[in-house]
Image 1: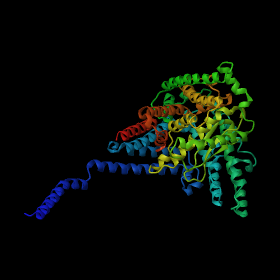
Image 2: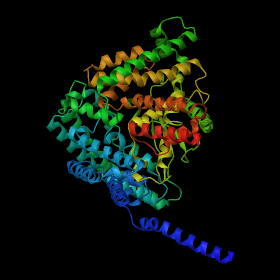
Image 3: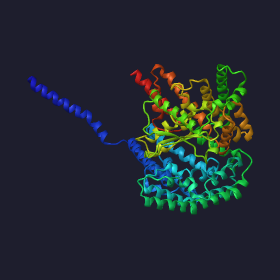
Image 4: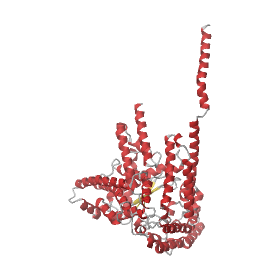
Length: 606
């Protein structure tokens, strides 16, 4: 056989052998394994459940639906009565059963964690209904008298349609008030009577909107100054209609609300403070701890962590007092901070300008710590006058996903002698950037995740990030003044004291005054702020625990990553990964960041 024929034969034999070797693989590729079939089926079922959950959220919350671009929802208010509660419970229970019927073990870790996340949301919601959270919907911090007057500030008013949509919502206020009263009466019947202190100021909040002139209410604000794009004829028509709707429907509903609160509800409010006095007793507080911290820690574990953190931070505060060479003890220094007028603004606008300046400087430093920044802008506003006396020092309201409004950092300008300058840097970093605005705006802009993930906020993650953000101030060039550093420590102390005080009230049975005294002795917060805070903890059990618990976990994760990665540690990459999938329970966050460390170590070895 000549050489050319030998080559042809060898090539043919090689081709035949290669085909024989590949054939089993090709057959396997064509046949789906049982495992991959199960995985595909499970993922498909989960996708359907995720869509049902998202659709249900939008159906139950027209305000959320509007924020997500569903324009027909602009004309509606939510329902909140007993019938709605029953439908809501059935909806959550059916979805939970759907997930529990699936074999999640066939999924990859990230898909499995996502299903576990929704499972927890559904379980905690159902448990919340069981222990009776829905029966106390009104306090000085929440209820129709708080959010309905603010409704217009969450909407855009550029066209005639926008004003008509708002009027449609105002016409539904009587129905919403009636449903709220229905839930309050059911709560009274079952024994869910709140502490009287949590209702102080509620009558004033209601009264501010039931004056004789509809044009003087916040409800009328969109009609007082209307865009020039709206014709004079439409402007007159809408203004006349607004006065009629507010005067004939909204204000009478609020008067009915006020009469019920004054005559029937507030007189029955209890003079005790702990949520242990609700009919569901200790189960109530245990649920609140799990809901807000996303942990299974008990009240005494958290109380002891708080005591340890208070001692640690107190030592650092003493070092700052020594640095400024103050002659006197800790109590004297705190009194100096509370009474020296140089630490306070005289003009509300000056306070707001101060916050805007801090935010502008913070914006410029973000690229040092983050590789990815949100597209949504934000601004600084004052808390409305009707709300301010009973409100906290500040809060943040996120930008809607449709981009129709920026995010807003709301600062309290009421009682300026309780708003010290030295706390402003830490507060702005917490509420705006790199705190709530950066984290929540990034979450709003997430892609390739189910839509419900962009709107889900676990308190320990969100508020833990806000508190952690305060600690980034030094790297961003803040806290140069020792008093500002003391202010930042004061905010750290504030959140540590929450662990002690919240558990003290709701687990150990502390009085309101006991809780106030503990905070007065250990923080630089003004008496006004402390009283407002204590009332918040009484009316919102467990929520205040989430800040410090979440921050401690994030700080632990940072330290762990630094220790294991050494010089390879990149804070920008760490932050980007931590924020990349939005809010999640703390144990899932820990697992996610530990996997990130492992991948970085493996990449370096390769």
